[in-house]
Length: 265
Image (cartoon, rainbow, N blue to C red; front, side, top):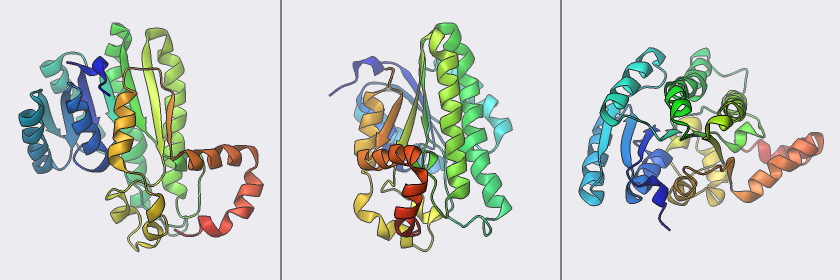
């Protein structure tokens, strides 16, 4: 299925060099969108740019961006506006996690996760919101997590950042609805990417959930198919999201019954 809405649209993706961001980029290109790929790994972006432009005959621009360097974000987005004009879709994909119990988490990891997952995401959104309001069109897609709906042991800080992303998204969705600007949160469970190389250095959690991990290509397709629609949330897998809903209604029961599984990290 082709998303014809994306033909010749300009899509900016943060954290585009690996994992879900990379798959979103290729899927957008397949649907005829022009791309701006942002990440710290500029060499990987160069390879992606070459592959995308050769295969899909669309414009693909790349720029170095560390979203934790908040003062650099306005300059990068100004360059994008100069080259592309309007930004039709922003995918805030950059993010990472470190799984540690609260008392063991270092302040550098705590600050780092909030700088990237929350403040960096907000700073990028802030760069596109004014023009989207003026143009009365656009779409902001924030990659959150099922951890932002139900926190579990060893993910206190990571979960807190994703709770923040969901709360921020819910607020700006209402703010932007009069301007025909859409806001979608993507709340995945574990994805088969390199995320766990940083989050779970022991490999214990990744091994325990290996059979439940989401395919990043399939998830990317769902995200791209939803672009420029009013889709409020994308939740995957379905059974995990059902668990989050049950947790909202019966938190004490879920915490008691799920205690053993939650401590598998």
